[in-house]
Image 1 (cartoon, rainbow, N blue to C red):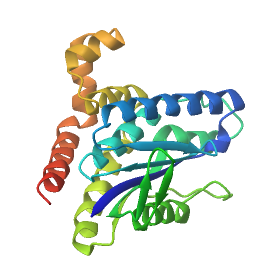
Image 2 (cartoon, rainbow, N blue to C red):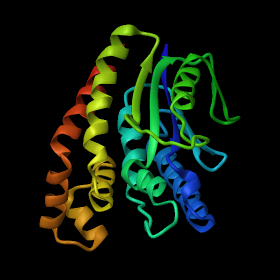
Image 3 (cartoon, rainbow, N blue to C red):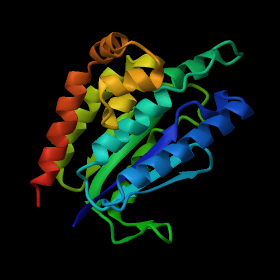
Image 4 (cartoon, helix red, strand yellow):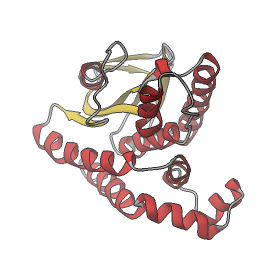
Amino acid sequence: MYRATISADVISYTSLNEYEKRELEQSIHQLIDELKELYKEENFFGRLVQGDYIEFAMDTPTPSLRIALILKAFVKSLSYDVDKKDKSRLRYFNEHGIRLAIAVAPLETFNPQKGIIDGEAIYLSGRTIKNFSTSNKQKVVIKNTMYFCSSNEKLQNEFDIILSLLDTIFTRFSAKQSEVIYLKLLGLSEKRIASKLHKYQSTISQHSTAAGWLSIEKAVNYFENYFQHAH
């Protein structure tokens, strides 16, 4: 039985000051609580490890792409002031937010109540992130920040391409566009988003269009339909 895991790390976490780190951690904890509530039926489990490393797991792969993109857009919406010594590293944080890998593979042990995730899926996603980590490197080179991995070669080839294309789209987002995409991925209408952000609906629509929402929505729907009918 295939389950899904998402492993992620915050890009250029060390470029944030202590206040920003605590604020980011608190925001991620709140997001995890929200996702637990939203995806209760899928047995969603999430945790923040060591401040900058995130692990999610769920019983079914179906919502995993949407959840990964919610996380990506959410972190990218939290941009920080670049008026610092280490401007280049902070620029990487503002541009990419996080690096993440979705894995669709078996999980031998998955017990959200006890916080136990063990098996091929978490090994695959975790290893992918560790291979591309920039935390201890002097020179930072970022080519891709979203990966799909699976023990099934057909799935690997098909969805890694989609993640790569979505990665390109997400890199271009401003913080404001990221916030709109994050809320749209949660299922909010443009009218509700406008009300929540105290903006005109036309402004939300402009952000949505400029960010490429139609392409994102198509990719997420394709992914969800694929896994809904895969069993």
